[in-house]
Amino acid sequence: MRSSSPNHQPTSTQIHASSRGSSITRETHDEVMTPNYAPMKMIPARARGSWLWDTQGKDYLDFAAGIAVSVLGHSHPDLVAVLNEQAQKFWHVSNLMTNEPAIELAQRLCELTFAEKVFFANSGAEVNEAALKLARRYAFDNFDEKKTEIVAFNNGFHGRTFFTVSVGGQPKYSDGFGPKPAGITHLPFNDVDALRGFFAEKGDQVCCVMLEPIQGEGGVNPASREFVQVIRECCNQHDALMILDEVQTGVGRSGKLYVYEKLGIAPDILTTAKGLGGGFPIAAMLTTDKIAKSLGVGVHGSTFGGNPMACTVANKVLELVTESDLLEEVDRKSEFLVKELTALGTRKDLFSGVRGEGLLLGCELSDKWKDRSRDVLTACMEEGLMVLVAGQNVIRLAPPINISHGDIEEGLARMERAIEKLEAT
Image (cartoon, rainbow, N blue to C red; front, side):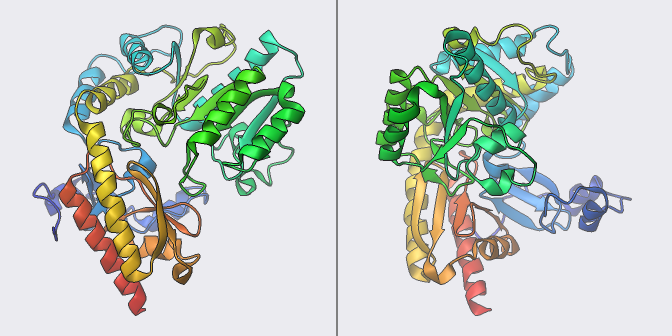
């Protein structure tokens, strides 16, 4: 089992080169930034692969990947190369004209998925906003103007715009901002009876059903195959669109390019972001020719959507993810990680269970550790392991999908040391 970071650890000169002569500290953040974030004390200085170093030279293994974003790790040389190449050509042209990288990326996404049309934006919230607007516009164009109801699910999360945060099923994110958008119903996740009952009563009013195939922020809760298939069935029967939010689950994290491939259905609209750019901001909404007709000229837009630099990087990400055995390796790594996490949970009475798909995993804390997810996260950081939480009782893991077996073992060792130190306090 490894005990130190890899040979490409930077020198102290490299670490401090970018901040030499600077007085920036963690406290500076609080002085100049709005207080909606509470970042860790450490400040990153450099990262490579699954490793990150702070300004003090301490190393960290990254089991968080920027909240499931850095799907191929940090500073992947192939991504750096294509980004630099495009940077020498042009950075931005706006949606007043198109560009080759955007067209190539749209072609690739259509070839790899159910999609026939693509809309680009910059973040998951933006493409989820676009998907919801498209669903209502499609219903308006093709059916009754009263067909506006959006069905979503408790504990869902779809972004931070006012529309998407209202559709997400967590009131703590939408309360306190005044009147919320109307026409949104939240049902229990994975409850087939509740879903069928609602559609039996109000199905003709529904324009779309929106869900994450694996709820991320809501606790890493996978949708059952039956639940997803019943949604597809209800949407078909009532002329409603099925929107899959694969912002967190997409681009190989599940062992497939997108989770819907494992569920035996195809959505009408799919949103993807996070891993699509491997760390460079980009997002896409995928849909069919028929539905896309409702997104006519001037109906929606994005100044930076389809940015040539972002699209160039995303093209390379998709190439690297799909044109290798990387997806098969995700399943093998996941199996090993679940086995070892389960064993660690048993030894330390730490986890009551581990769930998820591929390399998006949620570890439910046992009664002994109830409501202590933040304590566990902090202890792991002190041991040089970056993890995530999904509520007070779930530790969420989303490492780069190309993480090495040795790095997984080292991360597990660091987690165990963190728990042992917590036990001793």
